[in-house]
Length: 210
Image (tube, rainbow, N blue to C red; front, side, top):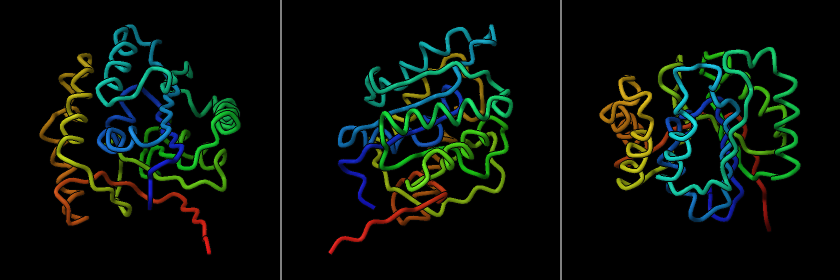
């Protein structure tokens, strides 16, 4: 698959999801594509997460994503199932305004209720579009990557550096640099590359040209 010159929409439920799931891939492709990063909840109902918004933008800045390509919405965390129709309608608006060629969302193996809603409504909103699922380790169950994208050591380093901007989560095991690197090494081994990001295939739409 050729990613270059595409409009790529990345959709996460919460701040940190996109970077955890595919930060190295994002760092690799963003200089060569029109990339839009959409996070549906800002987590600001939780008083312990007051710094998350600034950390979110700082994290994306490390990956080279300008603020103009970041959307942070206010759907309420852990209540996405109740907001399913509103989320679908919002995603349809993004489709009309942005018309992505490729969409990256949470893997279907993710058991978090918000992540699950994002994936299911994205598949509805972006019919006729290739959709790949990224893995967020803490909430996945049975994920196996059938779509592997090689990334460079610099991409790996930038993903780790980007996630280090989340000072709020510095003690969370899934932010551990060794775990992040080990996951990309493992996916790299599956692809016979040094490092890779792994996705599951939710929908592939191919064009045939004479």
